[in-house]
Amino acid sequence: MLSIPLRAVALALLIHTLWGGNPVAVKLSIEAFPPMWTAFYRFLIGVLCVGAFAVATGVRVWPERGEWPALVAIALLFTVQIGLMNVGFGMTTGAVGAVVIATNPLFGALFSHFLVPDDRLRPLRALGLAVAFVGTATAILAGRAPGGDGVVAGLGLVEAGSMILLVSAALLGLRLAISGRVLRRIHETRVAVWQMLLSLPLFWVAGMLGEPVRWERATAGPVLGLLFQGVVIAGIAFVINFALMRRHPPSIIVSFNFVSPVAGVLLAAWILGESPSAGLLLGMILVAVGLVLVTWRGTRAIGSSPGGPGR
Image (cartoon, rainbow, N blue to C red; front, side, top):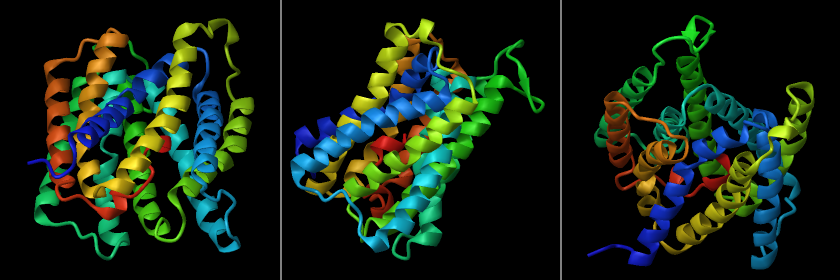
């Protein structure tokens, strides 16, 4: 018998599938909007969506004086993590990107072991970490282009992008672990709003100093990719995740994380026309299995955090 209603299972599967599609959406949007502008416009849209949700549900958005230091720290970590993520997605394939960024709960579990007193890393979860990281290495190696993909610091472009994404996944895991502590005293909607809002001027400056928007390429694909990130990922997925976390045990909801890398690989094949190799599929399966083991009877620190805007 299911421990949560079938409708909640369907919604959990839906939001994790949507998160799996985020690398594909970023790949589409950066054709016209470079990584920092993609982040700027995504979170401009996202903060309006989540802000509207906060007003509709009566959640106070303006922080108390003692909340500002934590919110600023999380926003800075959020900005760096998202910036690296978008750059990494631009350098690698959608399928490899989906698998690598999906490792963030693994890092969250690892950091929570040290940062959250009641969230220790037990043998089963440690095994999950090992399995998933073997899968990540397999996916990265399988995603290597046969040649001519450019070189960055001695690495092929895909490998360099994957390394950047792995750093971003680690920072996201760290942010989730830190958020697990912060959310015990600050409402998660307020955290989500301010991490996006405070990041906007930083992404704007980075965009102005970097590559300009290529408006002539702003066709249906890039625009829809941007809207998907802002409205669906940073907005709707957050609201659905918020509702599920309020009504059902977070440890159960977060256990559906394994869907994200699978959905990402399949969507990259469908929308971007990528052909995943046998090695990439093996890596995807290992990461998914590792996520299941890590989130088995999951963690409050990871499960209670507003995952949507930061993926």
